[in-house]
Image 1: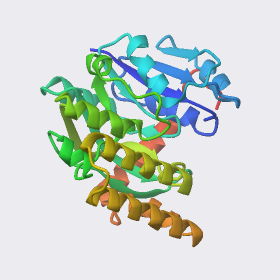
Image 2: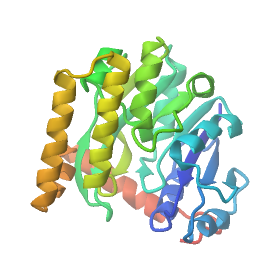
Image 3: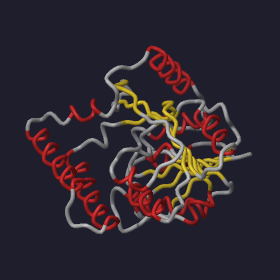
Image 4: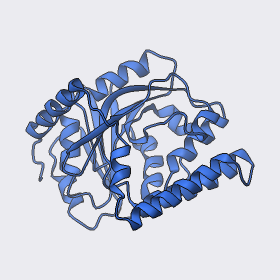
Amino acid sequence: MKVTIAIPFYNAEKFLAEAIKSVFAQSFQDWELLLIDDGSTDNSLAIAKSVQDDRVRVISDGKNKRLAGRLNEVSHWAKYDYILRMDADDLMMPNRIEKQLDILINNDVDIVTTGVYSVLNNLELIGTRGMNYDSATFDEIISKKVGITHAALIAKKSWYLRNQYDETLSIAQDLDLWLRSSKNNDLKIISIKDPLYIYREENNVTKDKLLRAYKNERNMIRKYKGTSFDGLIFKSYLKSVIVSVLSMLKKIDVLQKRRGQNQISEKDSKAYNEAIAVIKGTKVKGLNA
């Protein structure tokens, strides 16, 4: 049993080496790693090319196709039937692949996602978040009663081939994919609360990104619910107002902290610190960090 790991990257020189190390630190080692350059102009491509391991393939065509375009290509490049993805500025716990793959192959589902450790850019732990469920309906997704951690997915390649991302969207492509596939009765998913993914919130919780995401959210509510205004759209507008006010007050960091739970268990904190030590101590032949 082997898996394909895909890391698309664009100008990620500050974090890419750590992401790669977290792959090599996995307890499960039967993988191929696709490092997909999306037209970077910094040192990211050189870092990717520096890795000396036959399991690693660097893909670079000099073009900037954005995330959705690159993720659609992964299902065609992947050698194996199971695809696991992550963002270039994140890390994953050393047991992530082993645990998710076991759940995927032993259940009648196409996707498994997990909880996350929410961290700042310096890897300071600010919380955890995640949900346990064994199905997700269209109504639960569009009303945000369930959350699907996009970067923490492992999925069957056959599912990706049936369900492609909308490349016209510059943000929230994942939400569109969940809504569309659930409408087509093709979203068999399990989520576990265990934080197996380490997510840098700081780069994503910004005024511009949040406002764009909420705008796309409203567009999708109208598109998939067939209504011009309802409670969900009102809530989305309200969130946009709150973001704008917090930004004006220079308090946007409040949203970063709210993404994680206020209380971090001693068990999770210990596991996180041990994992970071393992990842930082992992040697990758040739890696130019």
